[in-house]
Image (tube, rainbow, N blue to C red; front, side, top):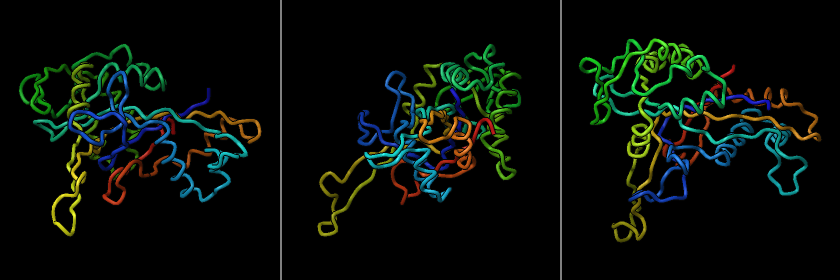
Length: 285
């Protein structure tokens, strides 16, 4: 199977709506059923990528070759497919360093198994480690995330892994600050703590709709909306499977999609409120 891995960095809070209601949240984000980790479903991701690819390439024929035709009477099926975009690193508030990114062994092992990136680090994956040189420590070996304290060990191997992947996520000179912070302030927590943060530390915003005549809230006009916070890092796979009638091989298909590398696109709801802007980078390029 010919595939490439792409990284998504949320530049603004992002709402890709899910169907399951969580507690008092009227409009929750999409989540994996078995883990409750945030995700972008492949169908939502493909629609956003198709729209962005059309605008960037300006080539409707090429868009149809890669993504398939919109019509039910399509001349060809899509030549490229996408997995769900899964959460890899999640930002949380920290007592020092303003905020940190967190991940966990379950997430990292799945990422490495699916992408093949960082296989040398797989034997070093364990819970509660921070990179050497981290600015998160408040006393001895402790860090504070939200209102919780975690004792962490320092790991040179983890610091090296972060250096390698950060160069793929942030590859421009203007991004040096955030790139260096990521290398310093990204930690591995245990799986359960990671799950608790990604469930309870998303952004929830209350919105209202006012009736201009009565100047009170319209019926049904008060609702809560959940957002994945900015600086969340996700990943997805682009998989080539061109049908014979397209006369494209797998390498050509993935080469055509390279135009999306280092592009900023919008996904999900509330584009007029500045939400859902994300940056896409290739792990291989």
